[in-house]
Length: 410
Image 1 (spheres, rainbow, N blue to C red):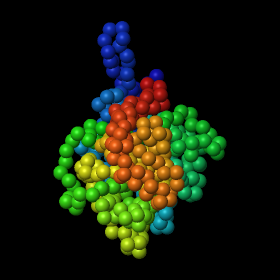
Image 2: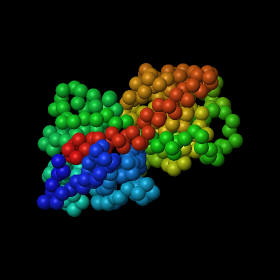
Image 3: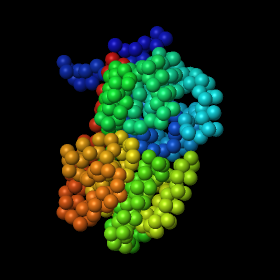
Image 4: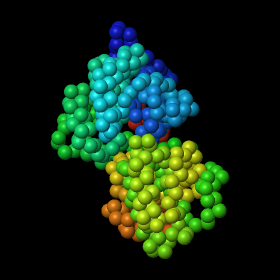
């Protein structure tokens, strides 16, 4: 039944189909809350899925995001036509000064979010990430159905403690996990009550945008290089483990491959991880690695993939590497560490190679296999495009729609 708030019918029923086969469908509004507006995969997912929900499922998305640091995300939302509101929100970090500010402003910001919820009267509040708890508390106070999205398979101790309290007190009506591994990490050990409802929805890929048939000018700074390009995409943060990538480059150099092989990292160096980036540069200098180039923040990812030969993912805890799905969609063979449901996907579709360990020598073996067996690599590339179709944003939006309609009963 439609939910009523303040005597107002919040679900507007619309008719689809003709004759006796006509189906009654509610128009819903979802408030998607993000406490960290720095651009990354989860924000891309929110924008792309939000656009498809409106186009295909009569579900409108409004995003509540931080005023500071979300400019790129705001631009994307404008481009795809998803509505948004901005508020002053402090994000949770490990820095002592940030923790103090986060604690001091926690209650005022929860109340501010509750005020936005009461103003918009959404049918569902969707919060992103185990450490983004303010939206969950605010939605609980406002009495609105809540969906909590788990994007990872690792929580620092302090985050875990806060999450456990909020999860029990402000129990969500539904949980979305980015992978089966993430679902098992949060709810498979018996430490927490099972969620009322749970969905595993892999991060989506826009296969129309990431189409190998599209052509682009070469975007690399060394456009005349005629060797093999190995590309990694992701913000320069420890969880992406670019140190492993540098050690892999060193190992490939020791095997005499460096002259015909170059590695590239496309991703933002976030302000609070500048020291990590400098450590990476220092490591490369100590090892004598000159084949790794950090490209910085890029918005021409399809072009980068189009002119790459192999994609590599060295992440530590990621559950759904969107950049890897994009590489598959662009028909690129891939090598990955064993994160999320990557192994399951690769085994099912034979579209890439997964390392059993985080040893750079094993990654080097897998990379050499793709380099030395071009026919096998070509088959993987073809299979990757087929697999990517199953991860298309249209399918992800349909699963989100089913989640929202089950939570609201509409």
